[in-house]
Image (cartoon, rainbow, N blue to C red; front, top):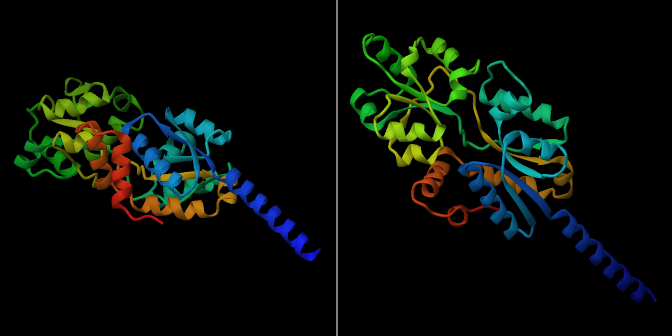
Length: 297
């Protein structure tokens, strides 16, 4: 009798455990509509599937739409950027250092049951870029040095390529000029599609370009990002953000994602973006190679 009851309890416990594992391991991962996000989602998908999770990956979404989907419980996990969360979602206008920004958005999102795990070293922020030859000839490595060079050549035209949004928004070109003591005339400001900025720099059609630090074309087109030595641009550290109920059901998920986050930095991601955008490799292949060469728990 006791043996029979014990057997039934063991069967029931096994059934409950199986059910909990099945329910807890279904995750929806959301991603935005540019190369880096496709890579981050694919790496996470392959990694977590190998750990036994069932993954539904949904990519190609705009930032605001993706955020809304996560707040509504339609997406469980995203790779979000601290600057985007601070400026776009939480309307923070004050200048914050990277650590303070992370802590602020983490605190604000906790009220929405969104948990910010460990921020990665990956910081996909803005930068001013120069063609490699120009950087080599002038020795310019910081925006302050660029500003000093421009001021020393009042009669020379310095064409600055950027997207229309940055040229016209209140935290874009004008305050950047004020921060570094630069003054570009209207003919010197060339507004274009963000992707064309890299081509224009590569072909020496412009002197300066507004770029993203981890875009694959930075490396593929031999563009030199200048150091933002006065810290004008906000930090955009990529961070896994997970709905709290999902973490409660999967306590090991935080450890796994934190380990993955720690393995991501600008150099690693820049190379992966370059392999896709310039070398023509597939996203799944690049993600698989990353996981093969990085030991994760």
